[in-house]
Length: 129
Image (tube, rainbow, N blue to C red; front, side, top):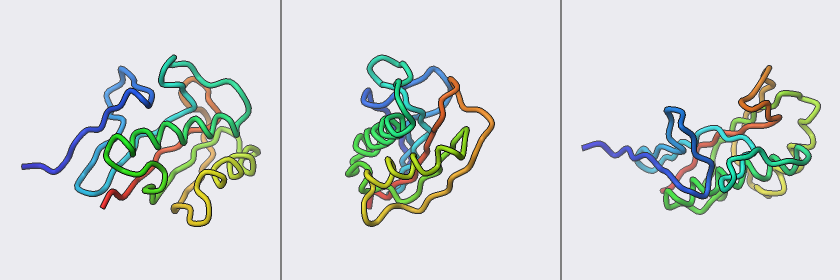
């Protein structure tokens, strides 16, 4: 019997695309990439990149919580995708405010384009042990 479960919540954006919001494999949760999309409306959140980063982190936290975790406190690895590295410091401010003194490991890359032409997307890995 497999110890792998798909995680789905109404508190994070859903899509018709063929992927899960998260996959729990044992005590590890892999959270799909999220842009700054409001789960209630399905619309991209308006505002600056800090506001959008906050929405992305809320989406990730919701998936972790649905899997039985403690939101961002259980995140151990994040990948940040930016369409413009000029946003790097501003994203760091919003990100750092949410993760505090012991942030997870992280990678940040600049990409040419993201779905719906958003400026920032993040995916995450959480440990739920």
